[in-house]
Amino acid sequence: MAPMISIANEKDYQKMIKIADAVGIKYSVPNETSNWIYVPSINLEVAKERTLFGENFYDSQKELHSNNQKILTIPEFREFLKYAKENDKEVYNDITQVKSPWRAEWLDADFKVEGKNMVVYYHVFENGEIVKKSEKLDKNTLMQNKMPGISLENWLQDSTKQGLPKENINSGSLYYWAPMKDNNSVARFNAIGDRVYLDCNGNPSGRISYLGVRVAKLRE
Image 1 (tube, rainbow, N blue to C red):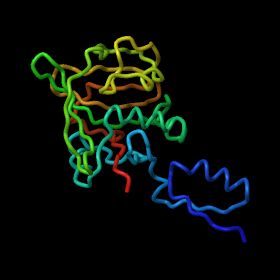
Image 2 (image 1 turned 90 degrees about the vertical axis):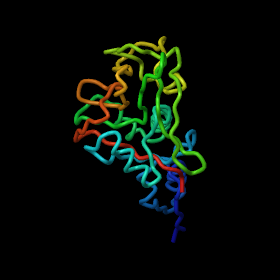
Image 3 (image 1 turned 90 degrees about the horizontal axis):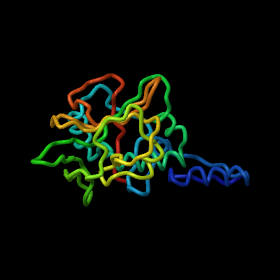
């Protein structure tokens, strides 16, 4: 009887399954790891599926933070997409492909005007705890809408520190709504039957059935 091995690390799954198949070794994948993708560059476990549909931006944050979980920031979301593109194409395509049904998720970016500057508020893990941070937007941030569009690939590979497209970003099919100076703009990523877009002027109070969150947590 062939020996059994347990693959407990999502990162190693694809590599180990190929080896096991090649030499005839049986394998098992624990259910709890199959629902998450570990992204090394941000050291976070990210859910493959969205949850908390129909909750607004602030209520979603409150719910996740109570369980020491959080919404992905824009830079973290970029890293997640880049990793999924190479390691879980099904998840990547579900987020970025132009198709129905409508798919949308909150991103942790709350834009405010402070004096002459626009600032983004977001949350990160520090020493195992969720901490609120803020920083001024890079002066090279693209602050005008592009419909269409900007290059998805260019945005994934090169952005500002806050994860936003730069002024000189290549043109493309990714629609982009820049942050508004209304102190009521938050970010989300959307894909529907005729376009995909990065929306940075969303209403945080919005409650839409197809809009959810992709949970991020520290690795256990």
